[in-house]
Each structure stands twice: as C-alpha cells, then as structure tokens.
Image (cartoon, rainbow, N blue to C red; front, side, top):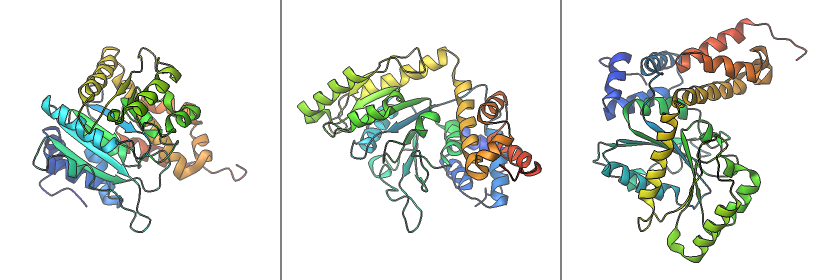
Length: 331
C-alpha cells in the first residue's frame, strides 16, 4: 500500500487535517503496511502531521472494561451525542485477532451502529494481533492521523482481562465500563486496574437494583482522587439501551480534557504516550539488553520526552544506535 501519486505526504497531511475521509483511510492503510517503501512514506507523512506538536489537537479517549459491559453500544451512544454537539468523531475499535487470518474477529461491530452516510464519523477496526495490554502496535501511529482530522478520537480495547491497561498510557482520558452484578468490579479493584481510569461508568443502569449495588460498591471502594492529581474520579450510571446518562458522561469527558488544557499538560502527555510506545517497541525488538545499551528505561524515556521529533524518525534513530553498538555477549 502506498499513497496515490497525487497525494504526496504534504498533500495527504493537508487533506487529513481538512477531514477528508479518503485521505484518512489511505493513511491508515499505509501505516498498516510493513514493507520498507511504505514505512518510508509513512514516516514522511507522520513528519508532516507532527510538525506542530506544541499545539496538540483533538481529544484522545480510551474505553476499556470486561466483555459484555456494553462498551460498543455505549461508544455508539457517545458518538451520537458528540455529533449533535457538532464534533467530528473517529473510532479505533481494537478487536481480538482471528487465530486463522490474524484479522479482527468483530470488525464491523461499531460500523453497523453508526450512520454509514455521516461524513463526521470514521470507524476503523483493528486486530490486536496478540499484543498484551489490549492494544495493537498500530494504535498510537493511527491515533496521530485521526487526531489531525477529528475532534474526538475514541479507542475501544478488546477488554479481555486485567492486563488491558495500555489504553491509559496512550490516551488523554480513560473510561472504565463496569458490568453490573458480574463481580468483575471487585476483581479489578484487587488488581489495581481501577486506579487507572479518569471516569468510571456502570453501564446498563436499566438493570435496576443490581446496577445500583455495583455503583455503590465502586463509589465506596474507589479512592476518588486520580493518581494524576487534580481530578476527582466520577462514578457515573448510564444506560446505552435507553440513552440515560450519556450526556453526563460526555460532559465529564469534556471536563477532564479542559482540565488538561488549563494545566498545559497535553503536550507533555502526548510526548509521554510516544515515549511509552517507542520503549515498548524497542523492548519487543531488542529486549531489556537493548534498552540497557540506550541507558536504561528511565534515561531512555526522559531522553525521548525531551525530543521534538516525529514518531518513526525517533524509532529509526534509536534502532540505528543499537545496530551500531557492539553487543556484550555476557549480557
């Protein structure tokens, strides 16, 4: 996959920024292409999209939670609220991988619930390709593309276990969706995962007493100040089925984003997401020995966050540094 001849990286970046759906789709396909020529073209595109990293646009929201909690239905309800508010929305729905094809098993789940003729909504399904942490390696690069052209970018994780915490390390605002009466809320509290979200949602509030009990459990067990500081974690009740509580959830998501803006934290957070992504990719490719040769995790992350470089340029620069350094066979 490569960009059409008429769509040079600068032209494609401009089209994405204007909300051109075809340009967005071409860019995402390009990022999914592992061939060397496509990698070079993708690097050039990201370089143009990341020219103004000191002025980050869009809100990047992660939605996670156990299977059956209604994340997809809730996401579709949020999209309708955002569209009524005049916001353009992009969705990355990260699904489990097919053991045969490697593709996404539930590829069109959100597409069927949102208007196919609405140019203000763009949905992309993505296989997690066996990645631990709930997200595919392509999520951050694809998020960069979507943030350039949409007001709201929503990432929904596969939600298959207690390790689905990568979403919190790559998103401005993380929302955890709990399933009433399943017992998962207690298990996730024990695992510490509920320290991660900025907003907790008990979906399916139309279930009555069982939903009320889960809401009460979370409210009493949760330390309400987020580890980030300066944010009191709300516990909200929603029903995607009858549309209640969705406006309040959209308001809470906006309030958290406004807080980040007022504290000038968006630039540093986006650099932190990129640093985390780079560290994880290098760890997968070169192991802890490779990261140690770059000075160790702490030094590497600090170095990356201080740089003002586009994603693939940073990655290839670090790979070249490792390729040029002799490997200590005693490591």
